[in-house]
Amino acid sequence: MVSRIGGVIGGPIVTTVALSGGARLAQFAAGLLVTLAAVLLIGEAFARLALPKAVGGQLEPDAQQPRIYRPDPQIGADFRSFDDFRKFNAAILDKLGPLDLKKPTWLLFGNSFVQGPGHLADTAERTLPDTRIVALRRFVELPLRAAEARQLLANGLRPQRIFFVMVPIDTVQVGRRPLSFIDVRPDGAFANRMRWPDPPWTSVVTGSRLATIAWIRSGRAGGDLSFDIRRVSDVPSLRVQDDLSRILNHLAETSRRYRVPVTVVAVPNRDQVFGRAGFGFQDTLAQLSQRAGLDFLDVRQPFVDASDKLSLFVPDWHFTGRGNALLVQELVEHDKRGVAKSVKLP
Image 1 (tube, rainbow, N blue to C red):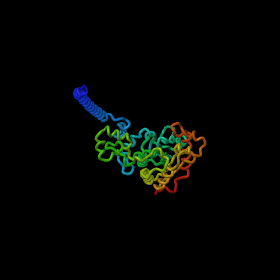
Image 2 (image 1 turned 90 degrees about the vertical axis):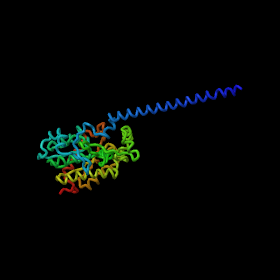
Image 3 (image 1 turned 120 degrees about the vertical axis):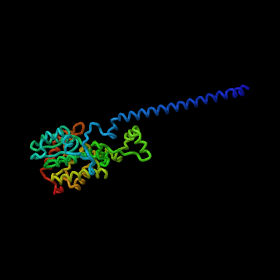
């Protein structure tokens, strides 16, 4: 009896509680969706107004970047004009004086190992007071170093030799961003071309700034997803070799056009000096330089043979004064030997 009454009385009560729980769950789900939508809308608006610094450069060139470039079919970008180039390097070029000055001159290109304070260019100036050392003391992308050489020679500079210095880490620039992924904007800014996901996700990612940021942070927006920075000392991939060849061929054309010898200098990094990596980068660069008709100098041996190797490096693994002096001595001895027979000067 009690069970029957309980069943009669309890049935509707239980049903009522169940319906209330379902309604509350639906209300919670609706509220959650509204909250998430609001957060996404706010995030989208904020992302469009202020991009995170970590990804902003992938989408829009830095506002402080000079607008002085033009597209180039061979190396991706070049300077728009010599006036733009000169203004960009005014501090050095004004100090240098006339480009066509009749004085023994070396023209040096490279990354911070060359251009940085106290490094190769500064050491060469101190070591060779009778030689004018021309180095722009500014970091630019690897292909733009070849463009700089042509700008200077086209406007009167005639060095007795160009030393185009490369370290394995230089492959990172063309490794992560192939030359075909250089994007020069209409205003002259140097920018990156993005790799977008395959359809149908292309429109989803390009239509949302938040989705674009997520795509960049995933690491899949770069030009070469197979490039591995941990293996810069090894033989570069065929794709990277092709880009390096385009840069070296541009440099070789400049050398022949203005009858100035160019020596490509391969400098070892710390892993190679300490025997923790091979020399695939140097061996490949030698082959590419020879194919382009450029002189080549591999300075690995004096560094590998040096006693107290640790004294060659400062804590950030650039060279110490001893390391830079060793490098300058190699350049001096090579310059005395003259242009290699493989250099194709008309």
